Length: 588
Picture 1 (cartoon, one colour):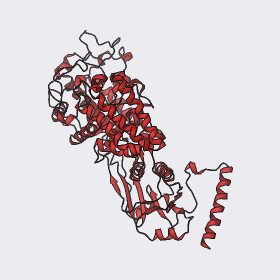
Picture 2 (cartoon, one colour; picture 1 turned 180 degrees about the vertical axis):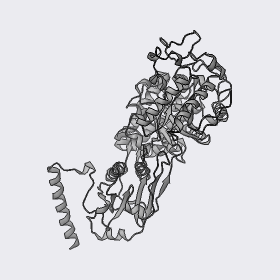
Picture 3 (cartoon, helix red, strand yellow; picture 1 turned 60 degrees about the horizontal axis):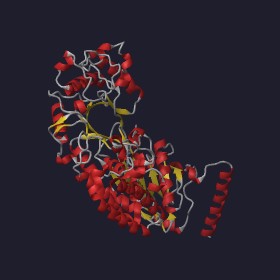
Picture 4 (cartoon, rainbow, N blue to C red; picture 1 turned 135 degrees about the vertical axis):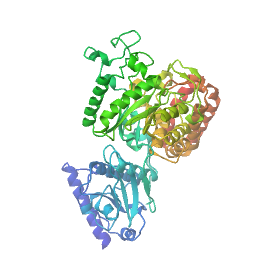
């Protein structure tokens, strides 16, 4: 009798669904939230599951739960619930309902997404505060699952909690599009005992994958505190303002302050009126960008030319001393109104070396340490090439880490960040279609930065037209971009372990030979003695040529293993082999 009633209910539901679609109502793919009660299955199997204190959500292909959101769920929570539903359907072939908490029933288990009355009743508090702690939680209480996180400001904690749950079930996202998305087919899912309580090790994790609004950015946990990094001062005081405020511009060695005709120009950073002007512009900018936490006030870009030679600037010390003086002056004017905002200055080119004098930075000044050294060597070995460098026009007598620590000792910053260059083709177009993998070097560098107190990392990379990297570059660069992004969020895995996990998910029977190839590329990079600096890479041929035979052997092993792969796994492998063939062509 029960089965007959269930069949009738199912037929009626099907008819109603067809009527909704024909009338222009929401289809299954829309992820619409149901306002109907959650239970549809009164089978003995579901009833048995409800008596189980664990969380078995799928058994023999039968879905045993729904997704519950608050009656007044925020947009980020609703979006996260829809994403969870989308991937549960992809994994299981069954489509869970998303129901409002007021409509749920108690004869199925529930995945509560975001803040709900039930989560509060059980003492599971939704993390809040921006800027604050970007915490995510997956917890089990009294037979139900709770998935939530801090969604204030620029944070996406609930979505990230959903990501971590789906990764636990075997999902993975390694680039843009379905080719690089992995979704397992599952008949059974038991999450009993599974829980997460996690906060990222860096509070801001930015690359151009994030700033370009690529979909994979949220799957790679990019974001955090909103930051604007780069060069801004020339935008608020362009050269065209010279006639109005000539005293704001640098007195160059040519005896003029006029910036006209200069590729790069600088300001008189000791000028009090200019500092006041910058502070006012910052006030206006923060007022209209309430989510922005970190903002640049770095010198204009350029080399070691066109800096101010006036008596006041020269009396302060070297250019780093002048920068500290300027930053502190601006920061004091901003601090009272915006105490939780930080102003970035850069250890970069003319200000790479520390100041001569020990002057403490104001609490809201952020010292960004630009990775002005070899692109390939890990920073913890203190490698450097002594002497003058024609690219940066600096003379080096110590390693990057030693230089950075001297900056920190002399200025005692309360906020530290890092700028690293991953735009390898920007410095040499020959790298446009050639792989570069860092592996463990990326995670070792991040471990070092964390030990140094770094809070924010910016990887300067594509997709960007100026870097010869676009949407198609995800195929080539995913091993580089994915490892750095995923590790910034926080993981106990090394770069190699992240790559191995990715290969297992992406390449099936060819996982090991594919991993061996990526690992070899990473080892070549780490051990290379070929010259590179900042964003200027080594010569492609000299970098790889002595490993040609090994790379050919590894490629043949991949082709052999490819025979036992699925169709999509073969497509991924073939995609990579095209680039690797290009590499062999470059070094033949």
